[in-house]
Length: 171
Image 1 (cartoon, rainbow, N blue to C red):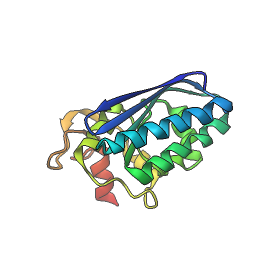
Image 2 (image 1 turned 45 degrees about the horizontal axis):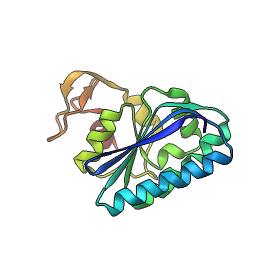
Image 3 (image 1 turned 135 degrees about the vertical axis):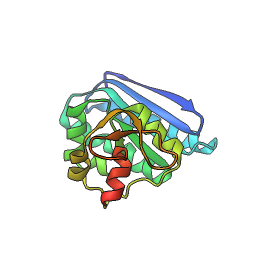
Image 4 (image 1 turned 60 degrees about the vertical axis):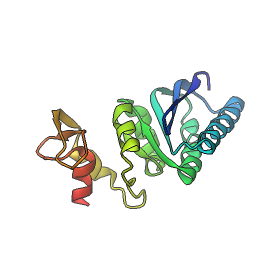
């Protein structure tokens, strides 16, 4: 990985920010080991969730993308996990093609992911997650909040709910 990874504790959430280009190479193993060590340390100190902020990550070798699924799988086994892609469609599509997006709840923005993790809502069941339906609902429009009690996420077009709650209603 020619980029770098930073860690930020935000209450019960460990935010893992990956920036720069990821390439499959000797250094990536050590970074993945460090990342999992940070997650374990966070949980040992009472943390409950991990957010992977991938909005500034660049995909080098496609094999790197598959290797990045490892921390998602291992983190999901230990705590609630989410990923924010921040409009990084190339990376999101690569993760989706490899099935990695079914391992972790995915969000467009870091703010959405943090709100989800702080809400304590039950994560979507990865085995039941229908990515085509999720994508067809579309993104939020405007700033009017969702009608679901306690949810402050903006509504999606043609719905009184945010993307997540509209999806849950349809499922």
